[in-house]
Length: 205
Image 1 (cartoon, rainbow, N blue to C red):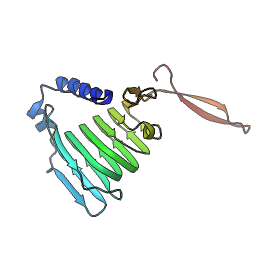
Image 2 (cartoon, helix red, strand yellow):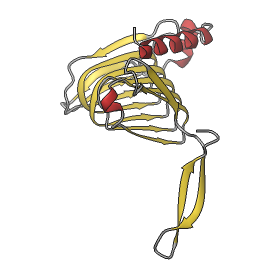
Image 3 (cartoon, rainbow, N blue to C red):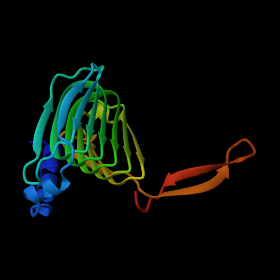
Image 4 (cartoon, helix red, strand yellow):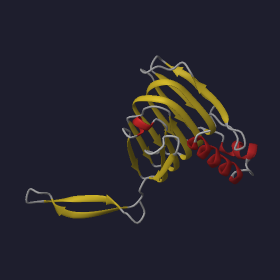
């Protein structure tokens, strides 16, 4: 078992202990009003919506007939583990809670919006990962070479952690937090004017 896998297992165990009082009652309270959906919409998009498991046993779903021209939208799900097998064009995770998404690759972008306590694992490549208005998000970039090519954009989010292979040993995992606080200064722009320069606050980075 790799260090990355161990980290995920330990994090999940801590999470389950914290939520142990919930079970079916918690799922019922979090359950969306609409019926669950897992379907292909036209030729270019898959929809996973209103899927709900329980804290002690996540609902396991799989998309294995995707292709690189298709987008995947995961919306309003709770306590779900979703595996996406194959390369897709893009993935959007919206308004989800305690959801784990494991994927191979995306051609363009992976977006996480308005989510809480979610894990996303990228086995190969994701050129851009965007995380907005979300809390307690763990991003796992498994491929050593591709991880360093990934651009991560965050906005209005807290407790976002990125896990990636160590440069010294690819079996070891490094975890780093995305800065939440920044310092801005007015500095010369080199053209007889001024600009705003913003850097992460080193105290919190």
